[in-house]
Length: 248
Image 1 (cartoon, rainbow, N blue to C red):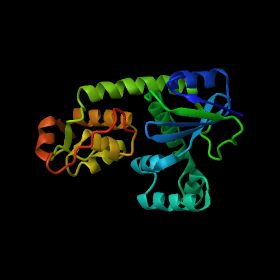
Image 2 (cartoon, one colour):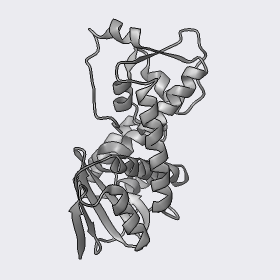
Image 3 (cartoon, rainbow, N blue to C red):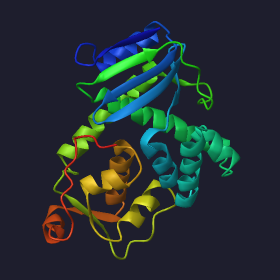
């Protein structure tokens, strides 16, 4: 049995609220914004977000939970035998499950963020699909994910319309000490050469919210400089990558 439709008829917010209110279970597949999302829903909660199109691997690398070579090996195993990516990461690559679970929840939240921003697309909830083999412990409340998603989208929209516009560039302050390990250190490593905001959003591996709020903290602490003049200086060397309003 499946529930299907179009997002222009039943918006993403209404769709998620209906699933939560009716405590539905199944695999929610949404094709929108040029990509496919798959959320495993159990009793109205998000049990897992399937790691499609390499997004989870890029996030784990950005969080220093995975080396790029490990990600490549894991994806080859999954593509070759249909194994579950998270199982492969734990079993074959030795990733600590306790460190992995918060990243899985963040990945699921970022998929909800993206879905909430989409005006059109198609969806299908397969109520007979088997549950995920690698669920998030205790699940992720859809109501909480919606609340967080709306807040995060508002903050991203505000930052992108004011400080981190598409024509802005970011470069490190030469004499600043290196930031502590974590998202700031990962972004600082990307800034060996100046990057535009669209480039950082594409390359960071983090969701847009984490990327922009970390950049804001780094700018406030004097680690980086945000400049539109710098953008003009490097325009001849760096191609313009103006993506959608919320590239995740």
